[in-house]
Image 1 (tube, rainbow, N blue to C red):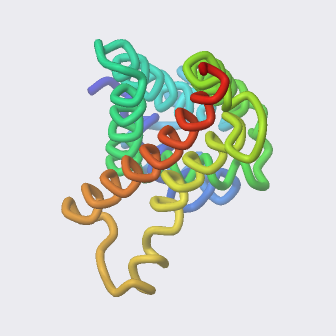
Image 2 (cartoon, rainbow, N blue to C red):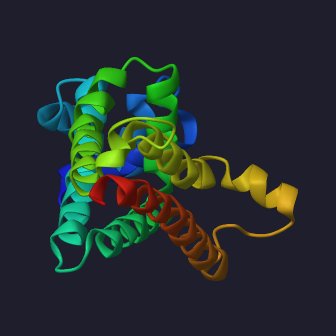
Length: 204
């Protein structure tokens, strides 16, 4: 591991656990085992460090989502793979969820997150509308579906500790995460079945 990667790992941990404003450069250098001079050699300031942390996360996320969509299958199968890889990504990158939640809610870096998420959302809407014209309007439009599924996936990890206590279970266990995937698959089937049903009168 390079010194730069060590700094990024330390920043990721502290931004996730403490928040961007509470995490200090002193703590980042202490945790990474480097001095401030070396940190500033790689990163101009703490904002640039957060940008690099987010870039690293989103680059990996984009890569795995693209791979999931490119595999040969019908759209329903590809969307289920997207759900699975996204759930797996969040399960193994808890600090990513925490950072995005804070910064998109009240942080100063919402534009950075918007810039990286926007192409994903746009691609999702276009793909869904092309396959299911009924998703261009109404209460199960592609916009509403993306909001709903994004919320169903992300909230599971953002509020997992609280929800786990309320349900008296470990939501992050392998068994519970796999059950969550199956639930999301079922929800997707319900929605796509309805979109297909709405298309039938137009096709006749």
